Length: 149
Image (cartoon, rainbow, N blue to C red; front, side):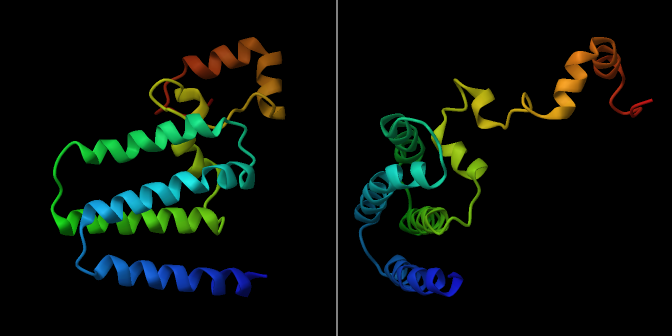
C-alpha cells in the first residue's frame, strides 16, 4: 500500500538529493534528467488516463527544457532546476499529482488553451444553464463585483 510507495520513493529521492549536491557537470545532469523524463512519458500518460500521443507530449517537454537551455546557467541554478525537475517527476510517478498538474506538460497551452483546463460541458449545472438561455445571458451580463442577484 502506501508504505510500499514511500519505501520505493525514499531511495530514489535520497540518491537524487545526494547527486544534486555533488559537484558535477550540470549539462550531464540535465541530459540525464531529460532522458529519464522522456522515458517515463508513456507510463505517465497511461497512469493518468490521458489520451495523447507520446510524441506530442515529448515535444512539449522538450520545449520546457529548451526554455532554460538558451542561456548558460550558473551551476547552482542548474542544480536547482535539475532537483526541481526530478522532484516533479518523482511526485508524478508516485501519483501525488493530479491529472490537471500533468496536463500542463501534456498540452501546448499556447496553441490549445482550452485543453489545459477542465470542461464543464457534461455537468448537470451547465446543461441546466444551456436549457435556459435567458438566465445564462443575465448571469453573463452582470457585473462580477456586484454578485448574482
